Image (cartoon, rainbow, N blue to C red; front, side, top):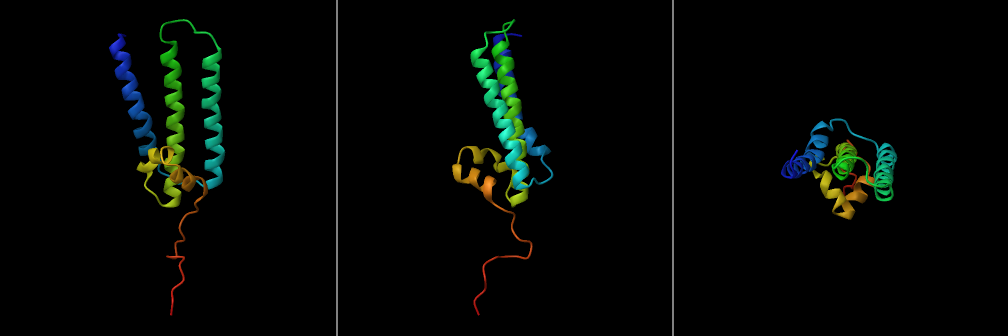
Length: 126
C-alpha cells in the first residue's frame, strides 16, 4: 500500500463508521441497556488508547493505522447503539452524530423515555 492509499482508506473508514451503524440499527434499545453498553464500549476505547500510548510500537509500519482502525470500529459500535436508542425515544437515527457534538442531545439519549402512545401528556383545559 502506498501512503496515499492509507489516507483514502481512513476517509472511507471514517465515513463507513457512521453510515453502516445507522443503516443497520433497526430495533430500538431501552435506556438501561444503552447505558450499560455505552459504558462498556467507551471504557474499551479508553483502555485501547491507554495501551496504545504506553506500549511501544509494534512490528511493521502500519501499527498506528491498525490501532486507529480499531478505534473507528468501536466508535461505529457506539454510533450503532446510539441510533438504536434514538429509535426508542422517537428521534431520527441519523441524528446519531449530533448527540456527541451537542451535549443536551446526549443527555436526551441518556435520560429520555419514549413518548406515550396515547398522545400528548399535556392535560387539556376545559
